[in-house]
Image (cartoon, rainbow, N blue to C red; front, side, top):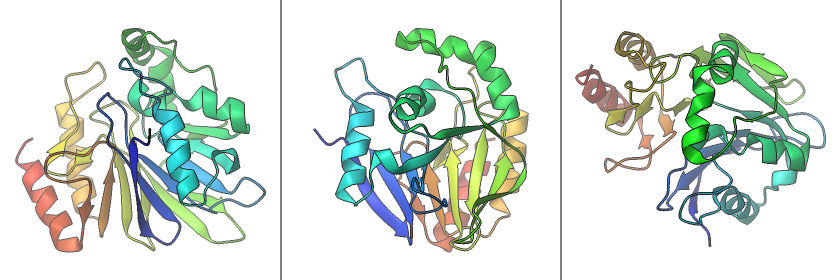
Amino acid sequence: MLLHRSAGITDGVYFYLWVGQGINSNSVVLANALDGSQPHVLIDPGMTGGAIGERPLDSLAQAMAADGLQMEDVGLVIGTHCHPDHFQAVDEVVRCTGAKVALSLPEYEFLKGPGGAFYGGFGANPPAARPSLMLQEGELSLGPSNGWRAEVLITPGHSPGSVCLYLRESKVLVSGDVVFPGSIGRMDFVGGSMRQMRESIDRLSRMDVEYILPGHSSMAGPLVSGRDNVVRNFQMVRMML
């Protein structure tokens, strides 16, 4: 059963909206962003399974295949943060593909400590895959020969080392659980901070963004599209802090 809805955002950027009943994140694929035989970047692989029998990772692979993208061609998995609904499936993706893994250093340290405790609530162990790339603030060069670049923004508040990825040429912001359509990520989990979330939202609101691709959608919509809508969305969520 296909539990993801696919949306092509701009050239090479695919947004996979989770529409199942159980908990799982949305995912983003940057197609042909890397050099070599495994050219795709997968952001937030989600979960392998759920309490009500759903198989989110299988559904994601099927949705990607419908767009002509194969999970086996993923060469890099990026986690916006380490919570299970975003990152639990990373071990399975690595097992199937041999892909490299990327997290921010503060998020990996969090995963090795209190962040790993989240997995017990899902009947799972924290991922064993060790990041081979520690994301740092600034430009991330993905495919040197094809010009793909992303800007890494360390945006704590929901989680200590949460990152957002900004694709400057297409003005796409992959926001993880920092900002949603009409809402923001929870700050009452271990590692959350209202002060840091306020600072992160304020920083993101000043960027030139046409699309916000969130880690979860809301009743306000699956994503935020159009500069005016992005500005209004930030105005709305800033009032929550």
